[in-house]
Length: 165
Image 1: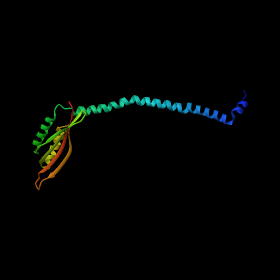
Image 2 (image 1 turned 120 degrees about the vertical axis):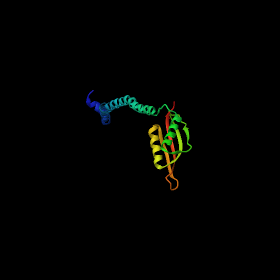
Image 3 (image 1 turned 135 degrees about the horizontal axis):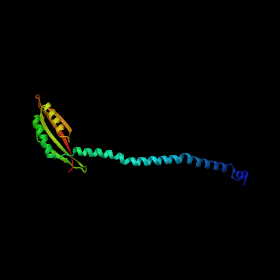
Image 4 (image 1 turned 180 degrees about the vertical axis):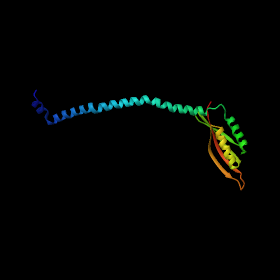
């Protein structure tokens, strides 16, 4: 077959179609295939790094659990809180506490504690409590001065964060 005969049988649209098909194959081999190969390598690299990236987070969570895991139970911490109150001169009134129900590994004991004393005594009480009870947090504090004397009443909401045993 000669070239003129092929050109006549295909026509200009047939030749244009063959040219476009050749351009498509060339584009696929020079652009698309290398990009797909690169994407597959990056996906493989990312999937290999994902477990390694999760390990530091797991280590941090384990560190939090280790920090919160103490030998004392809630009653020991409450006794220590009472002793700090007596040592700082704060008048501790009746306290109440309750356990927050949760499926998590950390248990929260919420303590409602009304106290009375001077501003300095209450400040010292909180400072010592947070220093000596590392699993304690202050969630809410309301101060109110009664009359013209230096007596301040405080409503505190404290939380003990403990690991379930």
